[in-house]
Image (cartoon, rainbow, N blue to C red):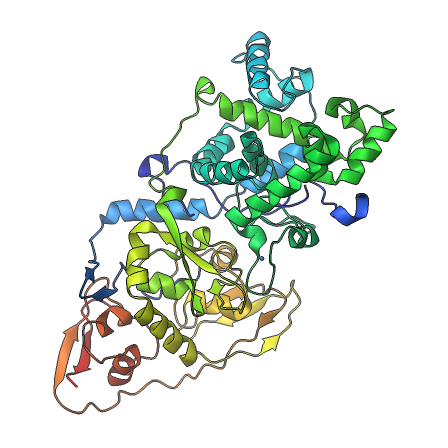
Length: 519
C-alpha cells in the first residue's frame, strides 16, 4: 500500500455497525526508495439546532427515549470496532488452504468469475488460491462483510465520482476495503494514513496537506483524487492493473524485483511467490471482495439503505477558526457525526490559514441555518475561544499516561483538545459509555506528541454579578443551551448570562431559573 460520516443508518441496520480501526493491511514502501492526522460539550445532553432569526426558526423536536437509547448503542458500535484489524489479519495471514463451503460450488464460482472478468479490466480468472480466499471470507467473515457493505453505501458513490473523473476503473473502489476497511482515520504501524493509506511523503507528492491541525490523507474526496492519480501513474508504468495494485501496496521497486526473480514473468500469479508476504495476499483479497460485493445478493447479504448518503451533505468554506464541538452545540449535530464528516481535522479544530480554503461538511438540513447565521456563529466561536486560557506547547512521551482530574466546567471536548486526542479515545481508554463527567472523576489519557499542557483552572466558584434595571426570570427548557437562550433576548450574550447567574461552565438543566436583564 502506498497511500490512503457518520452515516446515520436506519434503525434496521443497528446490528451492522462499524468503527475504529487500528492497523494497516500491508507493508509501506516510500515511492522514492524503490522506484525510478468527539469533541462534545456534553456535561449537558446533546441539543437540537437552535439558531434563530427573522427568516429561519429551527425548533427542538422531542425524541422517543427508547429509540434514542438504541441510537446511542448503535453509535457506540459505529465508532468502536476492529474491522481494520480483521482486514489486516486476513491479508497477512492468508494461507490459501482448501475451504469446505458447499454453498458455492466450484462450477458456479468459475461461471461468475468469467462474467466478472468480461466486464472489468482486471484478470479475474479462476484459480484454486482465489477460490480458497473467497470461500474463506464467505464462511468466516460474513459479519464483517455485512458491516462493510452497509458502510459502503456512503463511500462508494463518492469514490465512483472521483475515479470516473480520473478515468480509473470504478472497481478500484473495492481497494479501499483492503486498504482501510473504509476507515478515514485508519493509521498503519508505519504511519500510512486514511482510506487509501498514504505515507507522508507520497501524500505530499500528490497534493495532500499534512499539518498540526489538518491531515488531508483522511479527507475522503482529496485522498481519493490523489489515489486515482497515483494508480493512473502506476498503470502507465506497468500496463497491467494487477501489477499496478501490487505496486500500490508494496512499491513499484518490489514489483520489478519480483518480475526479475521470476525470470521475467509479468503476470501477478506468476510473480506472487516473489512478492512481500502482505502483497502476496493483497490482490486475492481485492478480487475476493470484488466478487462478494458484486454477487452479494446471491450470497444472502442485505443492501441496507442508509438514512443519509454522501449527496445529502454539503460544505461551507470556513471564514474563522471554529471547533467541531462549537458547531455541535450551535447546530445540534452529534459530535461523532461531525467528526465522521470532517475526518481530516486532527484536533477537531478547523483553522483559517492564508492560502488555504478549509471547509466544514454538514448535513444539508443543517447547512442552510449555518450559512444564514454565519456572522452570529463566528461571533460566538470567537468569544468562546477568547475566554479559553491559551495553553503552552509541551511535549509528552506518546506512551506516558496522564491521570487527569475532572474540574468544574470540564467536558470531553475540552479535555481532548488539551491533550491533542479525540473524544472517542478518552471514552475508549476509560470505558465511558456516554459523554457525561463528574467533578473529581479521574481519567487516564495517553497524549499525542506534541500536545498542549493543561491550562490552569481556577476552583473559585463564580459569583453572580449585580444586574441593573428590570429582571426577567427565564426557566431553562429541554434542549436549551446558553447560545439559544442568548438569541432570545436582544443585546444579551452568553457571557452576560454566565455573569448574571454565576455560571462558570456551560451546564444547564431543565427547570433551572436564570436571571436576564431587560437592558
